[in-house]
Image (cartoon, rainbow, N blue to C red):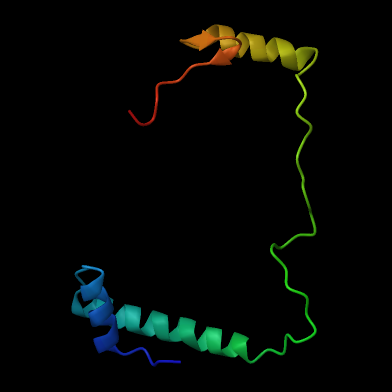
Length: 99
């Protein structure tokens, strides 16, 4: 793994078109060095018998069913739609984000 030097940080900043002053370049050099040291430490952990995971919980497909609200929730939905500046077909209309 490459060592983080002040010259490397300045080169990366130049490539990213960032302007760093002397103090910022020093701070980023220290911070990136600490991050790489931590990654190196993590790489030393034996994970041969550990199954890969994609998240921090064991939850899978935690979706609700797609059902029309009933009772009080339906009344709340109607009130929200009625008070919205513009609605159509039971849905609120909002201005487009992109033209």
